[in-house]
Length: 235
Image (cartoon, rainbow, N blue to C red; front, top):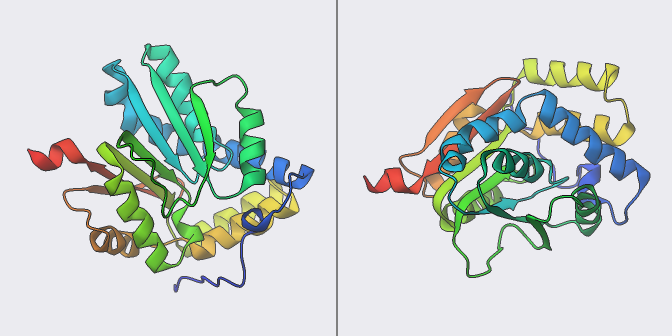
């Protein structure tokens, strides 16, 4: 099946201009979806070795959305006694405002509005995360984002996203018909399934972005993960 991406048909959360109850519910739903369907576990499993060393980590999350991934990482880091500082970056100020409110008990997370395609602070991070962002972009911008993830880490870059298939579209349609029925969540989730890259497509994008020696695997619930370990590349 062909990827259906039209810039003139955006996800509603990408064009929200103000904080609204609809956007707050949508971001809360996204956190629930990520927790129920493996996104949190996927990230935490990949980061487990780094967190277990209990050495200070500087983490960057590009396209943070509700910042539920940073909160999950901070919770696990606290359990293990690993000091972390997370910089959470997003383009949308209303989304950041809500994420910051949801993260009031997480001083380890600092928020910054910026274009994640060009973000630069002169800092190279131990870990760069990017979750469920690539399907919002056309191919050229997806390559730019993958290249940025590679350039901004001296340790690990982990990029996760949906994996396009007819079965995934059917499952997402069913979940948003029965459980997550709010209009924004229903619209955006179904559109995300159409916009997601297939496994071969994402692999080619990573190579085009200068990734080599990376791991790419299919994961449960129609997701996929790219992991680049800079230290392993040097061995």
